[in-house]
Length: 418
Image (tube, rainbow, N blue to C red; front, side, top):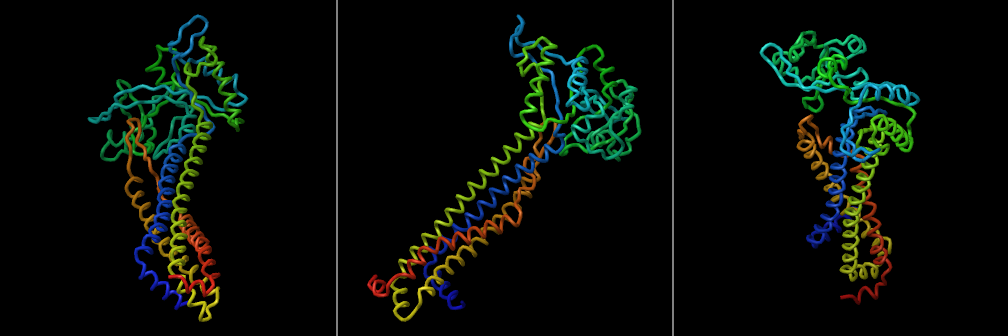
């Protein structure tokens, strides 16, 4: 075996450019598939992280503007959700609907001593923390008693609390702060999403009675559901629900802009389908890149056999068996793909680690919140090893045809080759 390796090394030294170009094709194929899969995983992980904060079996319903004329009325009418819509959601769709809540938003100046900040406050029901998962750092979220008794309570994001109490934001818990001209008690502090400022939360009944008492609009309706396990079941439910609410507001039953329905279940299904397409696309591109390396190995083996035909004829003339020539060519193919495949794997891993250290920690400010577009853009060690093994095996197979051709050549024919 030592003699074979020595001979392969000498052949590589005599043909440095050829060996280098072949090795580069192999290394580039491994490098690209690892980098592509790492980048794809970064996007997929970021998307999955954003979706983790929302309950899958939940629906949010928002007010809209009609886009279709109906019963002599023109399009462009503003639709406001009211308490009857919320009651209909709870009673007429009880077969699938579990808990129903509403959100009413307002912006107010929150003051603590000399510190103040303009904050968007969402008046919510307790079910909101199930639909939009809230990670409480200290204290609690809005509960049923707050809602029933119209308690003026406040749950702040940690970024907001830090501005209102810079020394130790946790000391705000249990204190009273001014919300415009009203006194609210801070009952909880939650972790803001991806370092964004987020909303402050209060009981829906308190916010609606203070800031929305003179309007029939209840804001946004949200609810959890069960029993809708397929895309068709969800689509049918949405059609029935839209038809019921549109009818109550004299809007066309099929007008999708009169009210906006955001179904987290179907959105999740569409996201999973998109992720699967991205993943497949990246694998296809990566495999074609690998294929280019395999073709390079095959070509170089064919050229090697052609250049060394005379040598192989001499070997066979002095008694070399076909298997020894076959083994020499295959071994050369395996060594080239293994060494350069490993180099490509290392550079691919380093490139992914660099992406993780840079893009993986880059936060994009969307105004309402800050999100990370790349999360852990890496691939597992098993994928790296599998890709390298695929290249080694494919390189071996690619070397079989020229190796077999070399082993079958007759000595008299080989010696005639210039």
